[in-house]
Image (tube, rainbow, N blue to C red; front, side):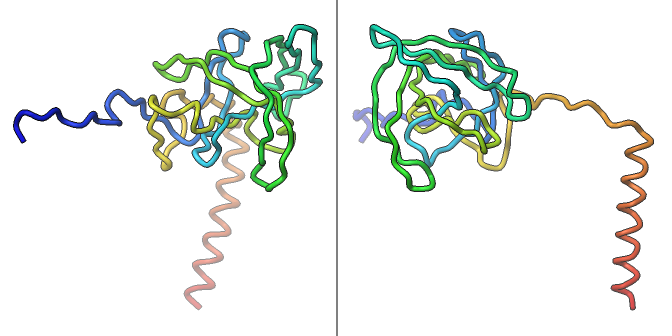
Amino acid sequence: PSGSPRPKDPLRGCTLIGVAERIDLPEWDIDQLRVKIDTGARTSALHVDDIEELPDGRVRFWVILDRKHAHRRVQVEAPVSRRSRVRSSSGKAQERIFVSTRMKLGPVEKEIEVSLASREPMIFRMLLGRSALHHDFLVDPSHRYLQSPKAKREKRSSKRRGKKKSARSKKQTAKKEAADR
């Protein structure tokens, strides 16, 4: 009918992100932390070490910034927002401490809640779950780093690249010859 209001478009104003992004946690002086976007997880989880409970409902911990370089870490102190049982992807339930902080991803800056966990074997130091994403983001599963360009790696020397290319070419040539036989 012409007089009735149109339903609100839930995607209007959403920021398009990939399945991996880099975020800033400005209250903790953390920039460009690699995160995995996990729409299967309700809550977000951050890899931390040495959690120490303090008086007055506060907690102190080390945020491990890089999987390969454990010395890259930042000490943070924050109020505990809640405690809750969380079931990991392996199905194991554990009690976790949750804290809140500001997150900046692309043009969006918002308050999010994260559980403090050990993600030692995981590639990404943080998972960003649905509660941190809803109302602000739309995930494109076919892309990564749409809002935060992937960090540039140092280029290998041309000699080394040349060797790898020629080794690859030899394998491809051998496969073609075997297929022709």
